Image (cartoon, rainbow, N blue to C red):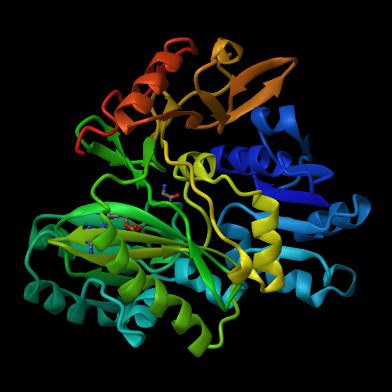
Length: 423
Ligand code: AMP
Ligand code: GLY
């Protein structure tokens, strides 16, 4: 098979790494890809939302399957586009159709889905600029801190959490009336604050049956001790030490099963990944959010623990035979530490030459915001590289990642030195 992966991050390098290991895979293409995917696949300089160019590529290269990495093309309807185009309709697309992608594309849609299917989540109400006054009144009924979420996609920045009621009201006004997040904040969901520890659960589905991948924990804040601004993720660990069998059982019974059943009841055919952001409140899991893709950097620790041929799994998802697949998981722990450009998640410089990658032996460097430039690997994004390691314990794995990072260099390189500190 010829397989095209859409995206350019550490997640997509990990997909390419895993897919390229499959004897079923003849050629791997990545659009647009990065310096890591360039070493194991063919990069094609096409944007993930340029459906016309993707169509041409798929036909030119006789691509059999398209694996969609990020949420944007899914929310923009790439799967529906393939189904509508006569020449593309037999190409398998891994990722849900536009309507189901609203689970990530609209916070309100996700909350309505959760409520309709009785899946535990924070209480909420949603507001528009015509109902700001009701929004203020709703805030007054809540205890601080206050959680305000732009309804639409806002590049991971649409959630604001503030301690003070007046600040929350001002924020609500800025979002709704002053369009702080543009289109994305024409609606705002206000939620009850949930206090607990977060984890990520990844579910594969063909729309009928499901399989649950190993859990992972992501470190979202830029600063040590989980301080400072939110990022796309600064590191991850799998499995999650506090996710005991009984807790995992609650996740499956109370959240995963009703989610898959809910998709069926709502007539939302779904081939792809459901990434469920969870929070453990007391001993109970609650849903913080849905994403319709794999997580980044969680993929960089989850896929290395998957022993199956990933292409077998993707084919089973596309063909509706996922129930025939038995997942085989590596017993070892995996960790990743994200190396980022100084300044990220705010302004940072690009084009810094990265050295030492080839000297890393005890870890797998998954490239993210890194590109080849005249034979050199240079930084091209905020999150530059995810350094993944295995260990008998996550502590052993994390130690290896930190030892490997010592070999890496670029100007203003930064990483958190405390991944796993809270476990
Ligand atoms: P989201 O984009 O919905 O995942 O929200 C981003 C982050 O905000 C989450 O990872 C949580 O850390 C935090 N968050 C979101 N909703 C809540 C909530 N109801 N209670 C506490 N924290 C939340
Ligand atoms: N690491 C969180 C995400 O991929 O959204």
